[in-house]
Length: 109
Figure 1: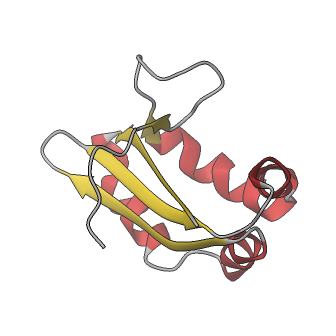
Figure 2: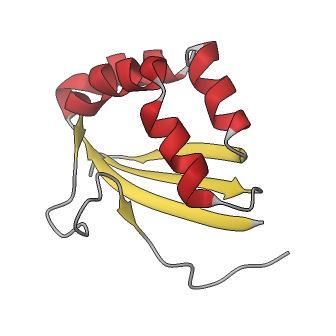
């Protein structure tokens, strides 16, 4: 299992809609994530900074292929088209990143 975490901003004017959407994520989006071995997925919101932190665990053996399957999924792409404009990527994110990856500094089992 691989633990993964990322951060991104949330545009304040979209907070209510973003939270509403994530209270009832489309079943097809959830199914695609599960099919790509993504588990224990959470998104946290820190206010007033409007900073979101996501965490998930990857249980597969080929993350590149599973991630590509998520990216190619038409329903997931529709979901991103709605949610993406609500997000505010960090200026310091890496090349080809939307959500900026963070490094695990500590873990307790």
